[in-house]
Length: 151
Length: 151
Image 1: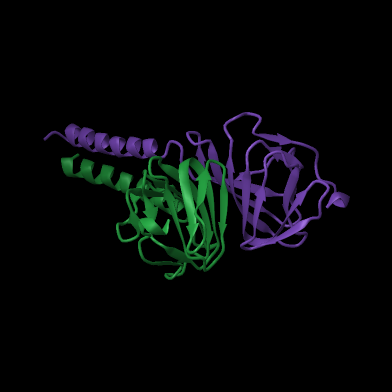
Image 2 (image 1 turned 120 degrees about the horizontal axis):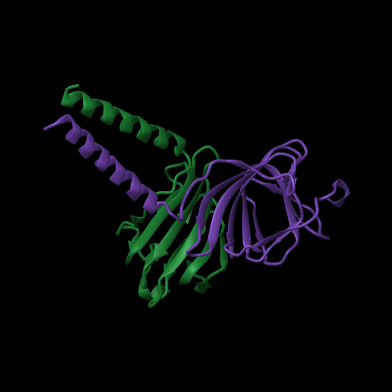
């Protein structure tokens, strides 16, 4: 067999494997960490998507807050669930008492609730997130930064 | 160049790409669907892992129950959160009333609770799952199948 045919055969084989992998993963991907933008977060915040399933209009992600970081006030159209998996953080609904979150704590955030997530002043905090109704462009509305005295 | 060297060169190249992909995805991977084993489930059940994070001892997955399928009774050491994302399903704690689950419903399952998840008789059901304390081999203990009359 000519060398060219070895090359062709092996290349086609691997191209096929790669395209199958891409197809299986179309709606299901682990993304790398991306930085939470400064117009939505105070301090350093990193987001990684576990899955963004457009078919069932659902996402799951991980959010890492470095110490003394927090989201702006924001509100979701869907229901969001927070699961504290590392460090010390908080959940705060506008006008309500702050809730300190430790590993294993769960927060269910009903649609339309204005809220903020963040870390403690000295510890980082990692939360896992599940949320539905995520396909619409207005799925999340971002509001003002959360002032120190509002916490 | 000899045919053998074409083969060797191309094979090594693809081996290298594949091992890099595996490394990047070590703790964060979307797995393909795998079938729930018959010693743990009645009917056809499919599991896909979004992430299995050994560092923070946490996993997130999706479970698809075809119609009239259910898990055996089982119990987790950690806390588990169920988020209903498609179809009609149920959550049942041993000795308590069955709870029907529709899209958007949330169930928090406290550590040590004997329970079962499943679909309705005629509809499939998809749930997203978050769970902590998953690294230990005894993280989940599987028990007997759930009989029709127990539902």
